[in-house]
Image (cartoon, rainbow, N blue to C red; front, side, top):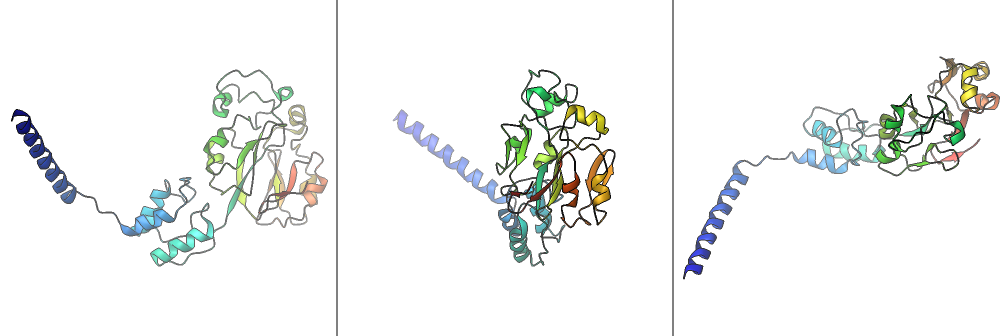
Length: 273
């Protein structure tokens, strides 16, 4: 009888607790906005912040609650996601300008190009704290793969010969997380239709750049003088492209003596060096 009594008491306690929890869940429940949930389900989940909000949840909340009326801010999602959001919210989806990232470094992280032996944490951020990294060029890719760790699509690898990061434009969704992570700020986003890129980030004078890297921009201005559209200029010892003017003719690539200006079809990932 003692055992039966104990079981009955436990059952009554469990029943009371269940009733209390049910009542609490009913009266204190936070109602979700159905549109916010629907929009969030459309988004790719990269949480990159490219839309201007804290992440996918922030963008979905802003749309669902009427704080934002632009369904075309998700670059990784592209036109497909913009169309889905537009249908949910009753908004007109505009064209999403898709982006791809590239590493603006044409050098090498091999031992011969290092100024000291780094024996610390295998992280670009950690290495960069030591005299701007172990590379002879202080603007170079350090090659420890911090960008790889944050890429949601496995689009980045380390070139085994050059030991620097390379991005596969077929896999890249343009989220920009790698660009935000790189301590040397040498990963850039461009429209996926862009064909010309400068794969160097050095602002040193030509003679200094040549000592550190034979493939770095030396600021010779041949590209600037050759471009028929005036789309490329040397600023602070580095060639810079104005993509609003660039037609992708390739004239700058042809005259570049160090070949740090590359021609690439970023949409299909073909390389035309």
